[in-house]
Amino acid sequence: MAPEHILVIGGGMGGLSAAHALLEQARERQHPLQVTVVDARPTWGGVVRTVVQDGFVVEGGPDSVLAFKPAAVRLWQHLGLGDAILGTDPQHKGAFVYAQGRLHPLPEGLTLMIPSRLGPLFRTGLLSWKGKVRAALDVWPRRVAPPDGDISVADFIAGHLGREVLEYIVEPLFAGIYAGDARRLSVAATYPQLLDLERRYGSLLWGLLAMRRARRGARPTAGTRAAFVTLRRGLQQGVDALVQHLRRLGARLVAGAAVHDLTPRKAGGWRAHTAQGPLEADAVVLALPAWQAARLVEAWDPDLADALAAIPYASTATVSLAYRAADVAHPMPGYGFVVPRVEARPLLAGTWTTRKFPHRSPQGFVLMRLFLGRAGADAIAQAEDEEVLAVAREQLADIMGLRAQPARAWVFRWQRVLPQYEVGHRQRVAAIQQRAAAHPGLHMLSNAWDGVGIPDRIAAAERLAARL
Ligand SMILES: Cc1cc2nc3c(=O)[nH]c(=O)nc-3n(C[C@H](O)[C@H](O)[C@H](O)COP(=O)(O)OP(=O)(O)OC[C@H]3O[C@@H](n4cnc5c(N)ncnc54)[C@H](O)[C@@H]3O)c2cc1C
Image (cartoon, rainbow, N blue to C red):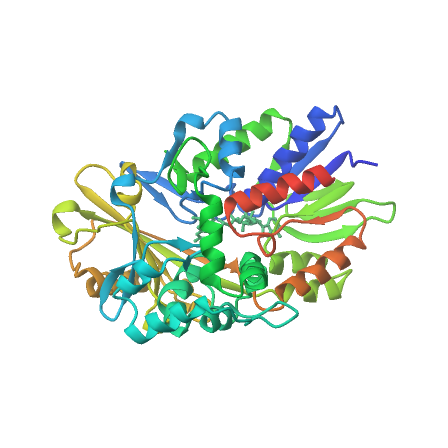
């Protein structure tokens, strides 16, 4: 029987989207459904956090979504935000890699973040001649992944295209998404398509070429040609509209109430305890990072808790800095840059926000944002603001020669928010799902599986709602 009252614990993009999909689908099927969403924080949206101040639109967490995964754009259009959707500025396309003391343009022709064209690869200053020749050897088919399919991103890419392509191109781009360590990240869990290409072609270069040809002519969603889109007043605008819409649909939204205890009721259903009192429901959706879900299940299923807690998370800090335009001599000729792990810097990536989304800084100012910390080296996410700022400014001085005093600065710290899909991840997740299925009415939605991107979170929530 379909549940009549569902409690969603966690009001990030995952939890809010689940509540929305549940209520919309119940309405379509004329099924009476009550949905309560509870979140520990006083604000909604989880890691989505936008500050709009004096003409600046500053993103503390995510700043845009991939346009060709349609779920976010579809949701925003449904919420009436179609006119607020903006693509990246086509004038300043392109990204850079900071290596050996300078910024190199990323070679053109990346498919799935991997070089798929030999011409640009041979022209890049990022690789030595030896590295380029090694990459080209991939045209001869070989098998790198073991028969069970799982292997680290580092071993897989180095096995096909050599260490230099791994260290200076693929690793920093993967790190830009997972803040992870390519030596530990799983190919099967992050980019299973690569294993399929290996099975079919033996060579990534041939496989990616075939993929590029098949995709030719495909358009991203929302009538935009941009690969990334956002909202005029930042991604928080989408969260605010979603929360308002949920209220209209009759959802009960309880903010500032951490669930500290969750128990199955003897008669069926669930009881959650919060500082604001108990909440009861027929079914519960844990829309939380895996390690936070672990705490709630520990008392009645310690094995499930252990399996959830075994998924590692990395921390990060983002720093947005606004400069007077006259103080910035650097041309900032693209959307930003990534920094390979082998450079051994605290900086993971930098975005020239003013170039990527010009509306985010007022006339006369330049806005940029730095990501500090990565898996295995994320202590900076716990440092005081002054220290985080000092590190950020030191990096900008080295990389862009920018020594001016910023006019404004915003620091955001994110503790254990980025799940690491490490080798063996798929088996870990299968075990979690199998154990969770033993508890009637318990459902789990987490960026620890089926994708970290916001469109992935929305799509997973929609699938869960359809199943429920
Ligand atoms: C710095 C950063 C940049 C990113 N950039 C991008 C990007 O540009 N594009 C993109 O698509 N994705 C990006 N991501 C990834 C994406 O933002 C996240 O994967 C996604 O937003 C996670 O949503 P969620 O609802 O699963 O989790 P969260 O946003 O973590 O939400 C979980 C919620 O659960 C609540 N909670 C936790 N414990 C309890 C409890 N006991 N009781 C009640 N509530 C509880 C928390 O308060 C929180 O609000 C980024 C992530 C980060 C951290």
